[in-house]
Image 1 (cartoon, rainbow over the protein chains, first blue to last red):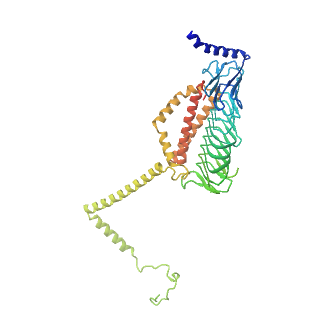
Image 2 (tube, each protein chain N blue to C red):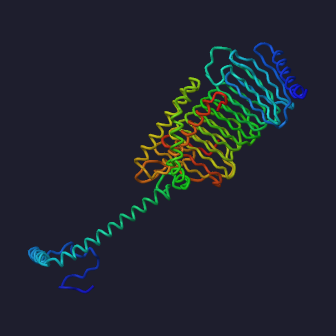
Image 3 (tube, chains in turn orange, cyan):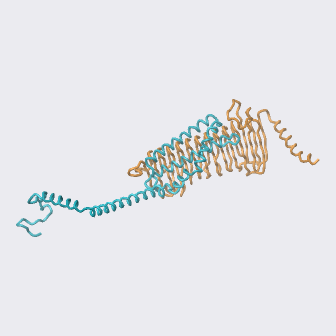
Length: 305
Length: 190
């Protein structure tokens, strides 16, 4: 009798789950679970697409069209964590797409949620989320709206496109070969890539650190009073067009690349006998600090947007 | 100026003669004096040699001291002040560069790097083919960047900019290897 009482809830949950699964059309999945307004929603899928959007309700809604290689979709809810996982039939065995239709996952989350999206080759898109976002992909492309909270985005070969509305946020981005495009952002940015191209627009920017091995870096924006800007490449070009609130102090250095600017300052030799050129100086009040360094890339600095 | 020998007084430098020839050939007397002094030196013997050796030792000591000073200067320039004489002498945060250089030679870093490289083949094999190709191309880019930086540093060992770029390239390589390791876990993504 005691055992019956203990097993009864689990049996009911199992039957309910099976009923919900049976209620979905073949190859589709639909589920809605309650979720706290400021909870954490973790989403993972291997291939296809993942669309995350925010709404005003305290619930997480999951809708999916499933490829033939998908075993199941799990939606679990524990405390303030909601987890949505697309489980492959041969999980962990192969990334290959055997020609089946892709999986399309659509997840709606409370707008103040923290969102954590992880994919392999699936493209991920996040819109309207106001909480912190952690977006990761191997080869899938990532696009996201920048809200007021921090974003950490990371990819191996997928491209990253982030769009803001001028709200200050802290952005930590890294790719191996994927390109980064950042528009209408503001606040702090730290971006690192090996061979990807970086195009960043921050207005205003307070702290910017951009680093690349061979990829070109292009920055456009406005630096706040006391802002700190660091750009560095090995062979990629550095092009910076930075307006300022209270002047800027700049130090540009290159070993073999050219240094140019839009204010008619001439780069000089770094030393009498060694290679290299440098361009140091101050514009206006000199409040913001800009440091640009490269080995063989070209540096182009302008104090106007 | 007073008048001498009945000549006109000299009022400017231009009034002085361009040259004054001696009344006789002075060279034979000079040559004889030189020859006589040399003979005297040769006749001094062991005591004179000792004085000569002492003088030579002082010269060698002075030279050694000078070399030591230069060596200390170079050491200070390359370790304590890596920015000195480099393109970014003022803005390269010397202490950071020094610490990072030490970090690259840290045995823990080298051990971790070896382990990541050993596992790389299997991890790359588990990536989607297009992603695998891009990662391999990026690792080749990093390898080439390291070679170019090391080559440039070979020509200009004290260049703080090159040191900093090289250390950062090592860091980037570690980041890529770590990301690939994480990405190869199909269940977790990266």
